[in-house]
Amino acid sequence: MSATPGEPEPTSGSAPFRPRVPAAEWDDWRWHMRKRITSVAKARQWINLSPEEEKAIAGSAGKYRWSITPYYASLMDPDDPSCPVRQQAVPAPGELVEFPGAEVDPVGDTYYRRTNRVVHKYPDRVIMLVTEACPVYCRHCTRKFHTTDVHGTYFRDDEGGSFDEDLRYIAEHPEIRDVLLTGGDPLSYRDGKLEEIVSGLRAIPSVEVVRIGSRFPVLLPQRITEDLCEMLSRYHPVWLNTHFNHPKEITAESAAAVDRLLRHGIPVGNQTVLLRGINDDVTTMRTLMTELLRIRVRPYYLYHCDNVTGVSHFMTSVEKGWEIMEGLQGHITGFAVPQYVLTTRIGKVPLARPYFARTADGLRLRNHQGQEMTVDATAYPITEPDAP
Image (cartoon, rainbow, N blue to C red; front, top):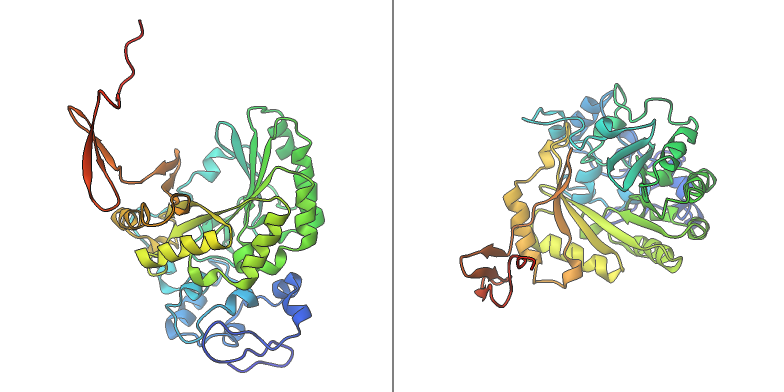
């Protein structure tokens, strides 16, 4: 893994490792965006690619985008293709396999799209697909079709076009009180462009909450600058949901990024995806959730991996998800337990196995240790009494 002239020279050894570049460059998110890994030659400067990975990279050409920030590459084990960070960023042969039932849009983005960018799926909230760009193209992305090099796109019109139609739609539907900016990753835009969008939303009286879905705190935490946080804080309430999938992603840099957001009054939630071979065991998931609390990130959702074309190899069984939820509920503090859901065209559907069953006498309850008790219907009525 020797560096070519003008490129960072990684230090070898156990992961994570850091390149020998000036701190001023390493701390600048724009440097990382310019230096993203997009070729086999660049990837070899960071990791020892397996033959399978090289084959998958070649097979992805013209089909799926891929890029990796130097920061995220620094978290990878350079010698282990099963590294949980590496699997999320480096193309793998499973992406090129056809799986039964796989779809390009199982969550219905295209079905519910109302303008170039607005997807109106729920009564009081919409998502605005701001961009197709990401710092790292996650291999498990539910919108993988929309970040393809060919055929796939979010947009009816050009991404760089006017936002007027999108803002007008939201303004003309006063039932919309909550707008989520997503993509791609909205923070791929520079602060000025992002502020134009946020300020446009804040000018609509019916919009009460602006949310941003971004994986930058995980993939490139240097993007979470004081200037960005100060700008966003002018448009409160602003919330940010991010996407940690493995404890290895929780670093000093990511913790500092979260801290900057919180100090500017921006709450941070986390949406984890259940991924085969990455976090599909109770120990890993418990550690992830408790480590998130340590850096003051609230676990929000545990998504069952969508059966998306090019992503299906990451799917576990629903039973595996139940096993993990059983290993969380009651074993860690309550607000560290996310809601386990499957995203469908009819919305997010909770998949948690119930801890109760209705009986002739009342409710049979079960706790995290498998202990059971029955509460009588006279003490805890199940149905409302008839109105007089």
